[in-house]
Length: 379
Image (tube, rainbow, N blue to C red):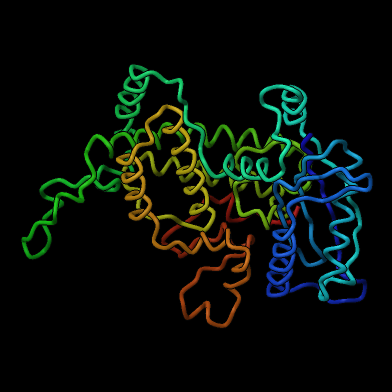
């Protein structure tokens, strides 16, 4: 059965709070340690397989979320607790750190799936290497709706293409479809039309993106409801749809207030995309939300068997035209956490990447929603 084990660790008493550079170092050390482990042997010789880990580091210590396959809740807690203790002890900079708690979070749906699969055709392979490979593949590859008929695919294609004009803030050129007038440069020369995205592909991508706005907002509303009174995403014992797709090392900072700010920002951003005159993204939060929207759009297309090369190219053109840079992608690179605070970051023009600054407008000409910009991050 699958379990999510939450391990709360803290730095030694009397030591100073961790600064940004130290937090980045702790993340790097813990990630390296976990990457070297695929499975744990329990006290009774049973094997506990690690399927995923999330690491959040704050001023006082680290909060770890370790996903494992184990025969029982007790085995999962004992194995992960022993492993974390061993990893901390084996790493000199963290050897004096302590474990405050180690407890399981069990998602009801996951438990139900595990029980239904036990002994059946969907049961995990007995070989650990095969199970690990299957797990990695399931996380990396979207699942196509192979049962979709050609008629159903074409009906959905027509439906999405008809929605394209509703995305009034991003015309066909944003998705890579250029008219003869667009293809003419200042010297009167024409670009090679071979690299022009087909109109139908641009319309499909635009319509799918507009269609996916409702999905993104509905899932953010659902995440906010699931989060409930939990202090943060890292402590939430329910399944989250969009919030868990944000940079995982900051999960302990995704509070209910943060989720509300993010939802308001998503409504503001998608509203601007749906009206003429959309210009630029206003904040790091909007950059991350657009990433979530694009991922949701790809899933939408894939589920209906429409994520072909043309659609991918059109969405790629949209990314290139809307994003000014890809600094926000550094948030998903654990080793880059805190880079914006380094001496060379300002010279490189890197925007502040701390969670507190995600809702800060890039400049005065790009305002953010008042609720997102004025609310304190502390509750």
